Amino acid sequence: MRNTLTAVLALSLAGCAPSINPQMKAATDGLAGSFQTQARNQAAPAAYEPTPWAVGQWIVERTVDDKGNVAIQRISVVGADGGGMWLEIDRQDYFHHTITKILYSHMPRTPDEAADVLMKVVTKTDDKPVQTIDFATTPMASLFKSQFKAVAQAGMVSTDVAQAPKETVTVPAGTFRDCAKFAVQVSVMGTTQKSTSWFHPAVPINGAVKGASDDGKWTIELLDFGTSGASSKL
Image (cartoon, rainbow, N blue to C red; front, side):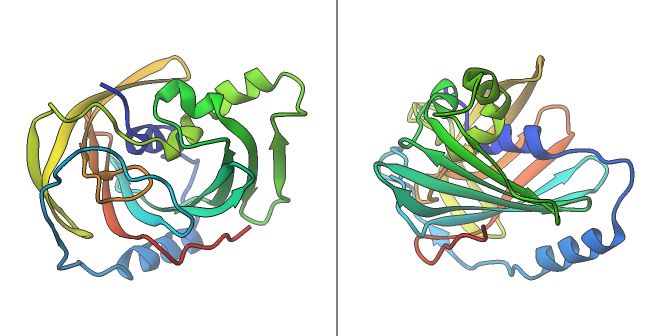
């Protein structure tokens, strides 16, 4: 069973900081409250093939950790570059606001491929200068790719889930019939984390509707999604 980005991204980015930034907390709570529960009722899929990436697609997810800290992350397909595609992860939590823009040579389908197809990463955190890594010219590119692997999997979709158990899931983005429910095991920084994910191919980019760690340390759910209108903030 292949992993989904949702679990990996939550594990890799749901960070702990020494103290909460009150301004960031207020902004994040306000952003979270701006999403209304959708009446969307998505029918059971005829097949469980992931939706191909297309410029303009976007999803918004909310992650909550076991301390009640909230993060809102928007993942968007913001452009094409030659044969590659730019994905942007705009994440806001109680501590920081980080935008990570990733150029993939093509849409990845496996955890290993998510790092192998990395071409460039552009990152901006809070008011710090933008940082860029071009893997075609960076010395020790393979080392940097391994460090970015968890974040790179933000664009990875679920596959090989047709035989997984099916459940109907309701999240703020709506009700999704017959989601594929499956176990995810991810190794990040030498630590193995286990979780459960729910996948529906109507959701663009990664198919992720909901996720939860087996140890209760985080949950993630889909707030909204769309197939057009995404643009870059970098």
